Amino acid sequence: MNDKVGIVIVSHSPDVARGTADMVRQMVGTDVPLAWTGGDPGGGLGTSVERIMAAIGDAWSDRGVAILVDLGGAESNSEMAIELLPEERRDRVVVCNAPIVEGAVMAATEAWGGASLEEVRRTAEELSPA
Image (tube, rainbow, N blue to C red; front, side, top):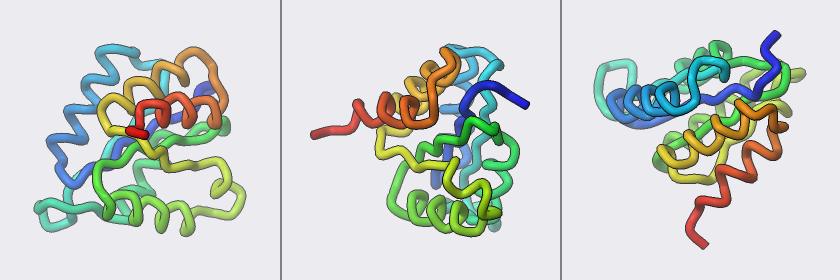
């Protein structure tokens, strides 16, 4: 079991998702469970509920998982993915209302320090415009 909150990055673009995850790894290292997904199953821009669920599984931690998203469809598909998780996991996954790159870095930094899921979310969301 990992003792740190996991981070999932969901973007409409696989390049944005991968690049954000690379930046997080370079800044935080590999101690924080991290996964990303981007693009639709056909290779275009978009998101996939199934891929988001797989990313949540890859970044799973019993401490929870924080999801960072780029646009509305990524948020709604992430919320749908959470609804489809086994009941015992649903309340341990949150979507953060934060800028994707800055939010992912700050969320991962908090997670690395051992923060709770709520602390990780709150720190990422402090970056949201008022």
